Amino acid sequence: MRTEDLFRQNDFFDAVSTLGSHAGLSFSAAAGVDAIGKLRVGSSGAARGIVLTAVIWGFFWMNDRTKEIIQEEIFRRAGHPA
Image 1 (cartoon, rainbow, N blue to C red):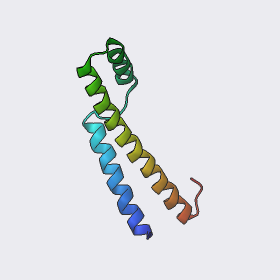
Image 2: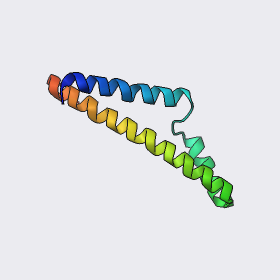
Image 3: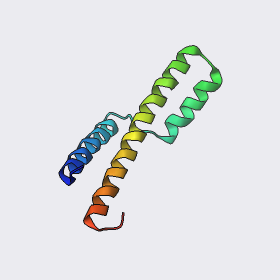
Image 4: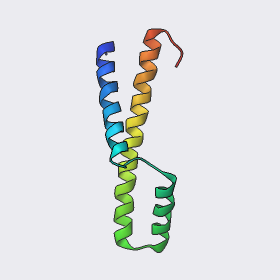
């Protein structure tokens, strides 16, 4: 993959991360505690919400991890330690 393509991908993943952060879709400890509390109550509606929350958290975690990998490759190509 060309370096220019890496920069474009990095910009895309950064934009997704920023958008999710502004929309309040990032992971927080308070949200994790809330999800655990809902699991203990055990209602089916809460379970659906928790599954959706987990999917969203997983998406943004994967997005951030992919962005880290791209940045590491950009630094490697530039001859800098990551």
